[in-house]
Structure formats: structure tokens, C-alpha cells
Length: 151
Image 1 (tube, rainbow, N blue to C red):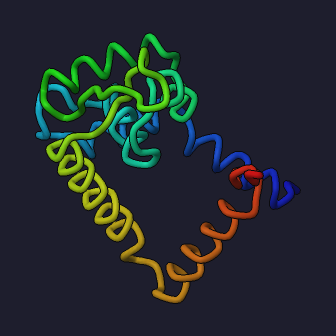
Image 2: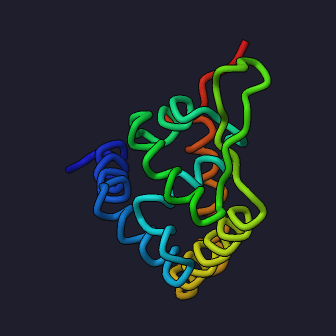
């Protein structure tokens, strides 16, 4: 018999697979413009979480190398969804930042994601859905995915 930890690890493995993310991102970005797809969405989403960031810092956040982030950011910049700004801390460096249009795309994808989650929980008893949401939040905040404390 498997332990709870093994069950959760297997479920997370399925959830975190690249193919699962790509399928999710494709659905979230459908119809949002040529530049927004499963490859560029993580750049937009990462910037929405972090705020302005260098390509290297954003790459660490989303699990891509700086060169890949830069290529994807170029596409998004040409479409007006992000812009490059001088880094006030380093005059030689630039930061990537969402534009108003980029923030609108993120707002749309977040609404779509929330609606999809609501739809998949529609058959659950409401108390189960609320408990799942509460316990998942706790697991993310306190478990192995918890952010490292900052000094």
C-alpha cells in the first residue's frame, strides 16, 4: 500500500509535467494573439508574479535560460505586451516589464484558469471543494514548495 506522500508525489508529477503545462497554457492563451502561446505565456505569467525583472532573474523564476527568455520576450515586445526599461540599479542592464496590454492578457488568462478550475470542481460537494482549496494553499505555503524565508 502506498503512503500519502507517494500518492501526492505521483499526482504532482502528473500535474507538473511539461506536456500538462503546455496543454493548459494552450487553452489559456487561445485567441489572445499570435505572440501569446504555450511558449511565451510563462514569460508573461512570470512577470505578472515578479514585476519588472531582468531576463536572467525571470529565467530563474520560470525555469528557462536567459537566452530563451530573451527570444520569447522579443516576440512579446513586438506585440506590445511587454517592454524593456533601463534598470535603475544598473545603467547597463534592462528590465522586462508588462505593458497595459500584457496585464490585460494576464487578467484574461487568470479568469480563464479560475473558470476552468471552478468547472472541474462543479461536481464536488462544496465543502470538499473549499477544503481542497484551503489544504492546497496550506501545502503550497508550508510544504516542499514553500518559499524560502528571506532575511
